[in-house]
Image 1 (cartoon, helix red, strand yellow):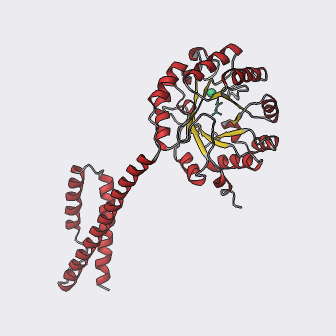
Image 2 (cartoon, protein in one colour):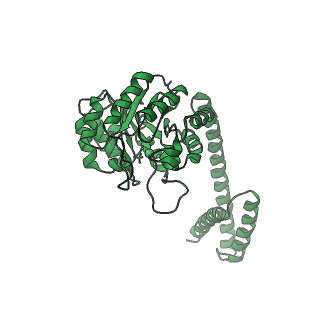
Image 3 (tube, protein in one colour):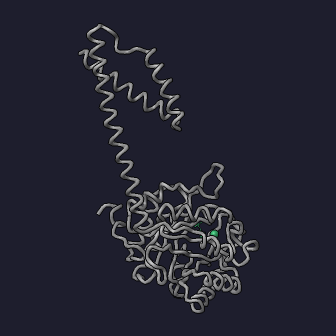
Length: 360
Ligand code: PEP
Ligand code: MN
């Protein structure tokens, strides 16, 4: 079996309480900091209908010395969340020890973070540890570098360990240049993943893409418009005092308004509308091709005339006049100059080629 085919067998993830077609929303703090903060945030997001709670127990921080998570003790806080609220609980695992501890604690969803999914050795160790635990759901974040194969490879390693409840999370890519977002989304990469694995559930993490709370709403809507299956959003009961990723976390109240304002794009009516629009595109293309064929036939007619009267095929001044007139006209129609130039050049070249053929 080729490296990219097995993911095609994956079925969409179903989360109890989330209707098919509705976005899966995972929300909760970047890190579980204290029992109080973990439970307070959980109660608040539960109250707005969230079904899956996230909180980092072990935090992979870029710089040493920053808060690295509360560690194993926080697993008990997530157990308490699960017990009290009935939400599924999710945390990041990066090592074999994390997987063991998370399995022992009955964590429902484990995600592999971007720094880990970039490392096939680490992913394989996690996969080996998950072997035989198909009750667990595993989500694989894209690697920090924009490498689709590495992402696919990580998903396959988990799949080959027998995990069938699998999803991908798009959280953007590290990039050196200045960007408004913390991570460069490079949307074409998750779109290509969708093409390779149509049944795979792909969520978007607008918090880590945007890096600032003001971007979360628009990125979430963009993701749903594009066809992502859900969102992982960082939410903290006191975001300004969060110990990690403070700038990008939203309060549960803000989360409520973000989710409440989201337009969900799905279902048959939109597909109908889309197919009507596509029909119009098909019609335009038919017209374009018919007009091009007619233009070439007139061009050959001119070629025959030039040959009969011993005229040269290339008439530069005529070509200049044509280009100038077309650019002006296209400009009035709202078409970009370089696009018009490109198209007209291609058409002119083909006309010349067809006329020269007559001189053979
Ligand atoms: C996180 O989800 O808190 C996290 C560390 O994310 P990422 O791996 O996407 O950086
Ligand atoms: Mn975070």
